[in-house]
Length: 410
Image (cartoon, rainbow, N blue to C red; front, side):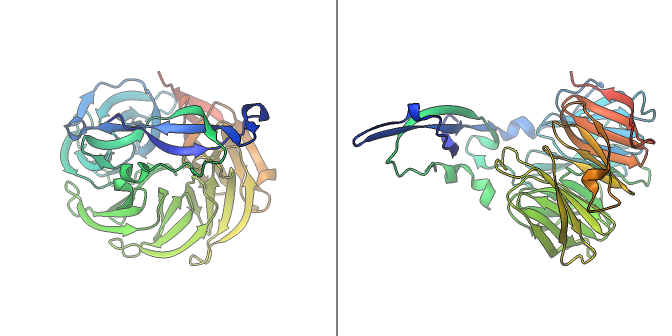
């Protein structure tokens, strides 16, 4: 499809030299972002999974830890399986090709993964020979359908154009609404661990997965064929899911939402904490919730900060203090320590004992390029994903994290 639409408009007054005002003539130069939909035909992604020998990463996405296995998403391509029994020498052992995959979760012998709009159930009783068992179609309303196929993203091109100063055009496109139809409507008994940027979560023998506006609840009584039990509408722009105790903490670009999950089949709204438009994940620990806010493609003018919230009254979360950051993404808190991925600033480690002095209690700052998410397996071992690959650290000494290994991006 080659129809071009205005995905957004940002008026930029470049200089007085670009504006001419001669009597009734007045023009200005504006910055216009054009975008075309990227479309994938259903026949291209509704195929069997592929199994390949282990190979290096191309574009590291989300990570998931299951026992001694480290699962790493290669964005929109599939999942790398890494033997992490020796964190100083992790080994790629297998790659599961899944078109459109970005999220995953594991329950016993079953791996759950998204494939664009679909949810896949994969038998991993033999990790070297995974088998696709079930595909639930059109679960995730992340993208709109067009006659040619599924809209999976958009190109982005910036152009500078001359416009009439007296024009009443507000930058909106008459095509825009028609292009977004979808937006409106191992067998051990161990728990896997996702990062704070995850959209999938496991609790009480249920799988929870979010798209841009809803929680999808799947019962796992028959784990090989999840029961699509419920869809709970939350709010437009939700991005991350963090199950904690009997609650689901949901991070969105307008706030944090807390749902009571004491009835696992039917999460119910409890409370929320609102903030200005921002992209954010949330991590809960004890009677505190930590929310990172950042600007990004969908949150252009957002603040970059860490919010510390008191959730001792779960129905009325209260802001304790905000701390400026560079461009914070994922985080993990264990005990008195926070491990925070501050985007291009790298990894930061804080003592969070004193809610009002966190910025004065930074213990370490590791600068290894742009960081995205972190999983603290325990207080002395963390896994960090970023644009330069997957790095592991021994954090026995919080002031001097010791590098253990790196899985680079090729």
